[in-house]
Image (cartoon, rainbow over all chains, first blue to last red; front, side, top):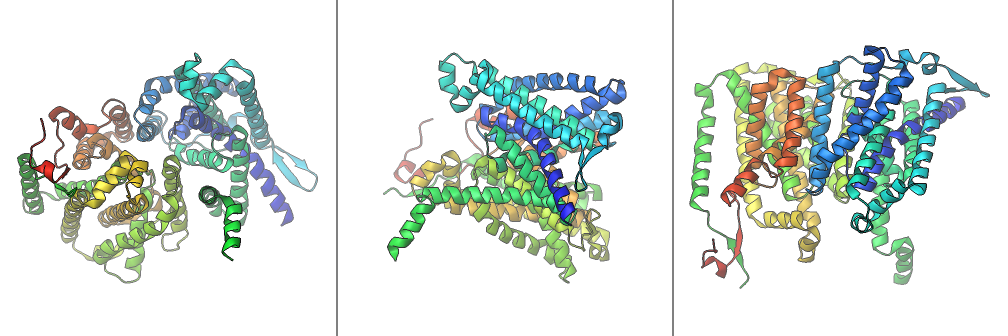
Length: 305
Length: 335
């Protein structure tokens, strides 16, 4: 019993790495471009499908496929921002939701038309990585692939952190995120910054897609479920925080594996409930703050007595 | 006096209403002259109109962008299955289930309506997933397998088809009339004020929460009615289809192409969607790809939809109810 619990916790934390990767792109778009990309999950699946096509259809080695798909998806993200999202953003809060939901439907069905409905996986092409693991004292096993994904996630978030704090582009991104007009006045081209953010987000989605294809089966319609996970990680971790996505991802992963340890059907449900709880907590905290905070509430209670 | 009243209907609108009444009569008599296939298509059109009008009320008038209306479509179907199981006849269940779902939405609204716009959109979707997961644990639904409303097989197929058709037609017409009356009344003015500027609306004394709540519950009930009608014509209830995101994609498509926030937009959009489905539906996934692509095209290049384009062209909105100050009524507005 105790071992199952520890095992579930270890798996949940590692799974959180995957969620952090897919949430980081979404969070970047949301925080910098103020754009809710409902097609993020479908772009993730597109990345996975392209990698699968390179490996299965053209016989490329997996590492080459991954190294090619990431820049290709970054370019597609750049184009999508320039051709579609930019225009949608000018139309208020509603249009981005409409455009990206439409884009999601278009992507899903185009992939279905091109690649068929067969479930596919990169698992057969990465050899022992897909199934082998390390056994820790106490009988806890850590899969090599989940550890690789987690380490990659921490590495990617670290790189993003360095980029945000140390580079020109990072400064431009932060400036645009906090005040696009003031940033423009300082000579920053906000549109270029937005495109760069979209390119990074798409590359992160593709990286997530490749990992998803390595550890599971992918279908053209798998995107929306991944989008929900990404959203849950973003909201639980706190919108606009880079390392928050890792915390949110780990909390989500833990909720899912612990829920799944109780009953398989509970796995996804537990994740959803944690999100709703996080939102409810946010509402309560904001409403309390609007009335002067918890301290003010207790003080007022004291006064009436 | 700052009393306001509705400006009298222009002649074109009175003609339009007359034509709509005529069309309703023609459609009600459709079983006399149309084939079973046409009746089925018209039933589907009625369901689509119902969904589109509901989504338009939410997003176009109350500013509530939900990507989770499939929650209520699915819940409507599930409530109907459950009600029939308890012994209620399928046709009463078809109408009672939406009331139950509207009550659920009323309770839910105290939570979801406090969320910000993006949070609301996503939370609704997550709620749909939660409802789907919960419904799947019901032994009656048998997980992914779903269940069938076998009681409907007791009716002769033609009788059943006609009954569902007339209910769908009556529901679509009733929802249009109700939306029209609602929007020309106090709630309509309030909801449009909220959509245009929520803070300003609140500052002049509109209870934004109450207005949103009424519209949210109403839209949930309407979507549930669409769900029960769809279940009655399809007979099989599967959680994956019932709670599928495709319902919201269709609603959004119809409202967007027809014209968000216009009264006639959803109807035009529903007809447009059915027409596309008839012409291109055989292409399967590529047809759905086209639906997505057309939605993007409309959002980017014609964001006010077909009716919006017509308004821009003609300078006036068909069936818009404009309020005017009483004394302003005496003098016609400058052209």
